[in-house]
Image (cartoon, rainbow, N blue to C red; front, top):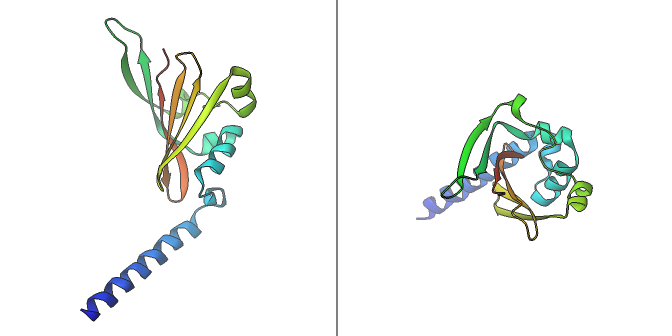
Length: 143
């Protein structure tokens, strides 16, 4: 029993060391662990949007069809992605857009941008890869 407990303790110490080693090897720009801080920079700098957007980028668009709208999913290649993907703070304020951020867990987060009293609603899905937050999916639920 004592041996099993020592083995488990050693396993967790080793696992933590491996995780720390991975984080230390990540590029300096990836050291932002807090999604909110990353999103603020990401939304303001087009070069960060280009660097931290996974290609192909999955894009869901709602198509207004009868009898009801339906989602269409495409995978965008680099040349099909229009930057900036996310409007910066000044543009969001000018357009009356609000942002709600949520971290689903340590590896998944999302930003929802909407405009009150309209059908404007876009969700941006982020996943951490090797310590870096990456935009992996854009869901445009606007009608």
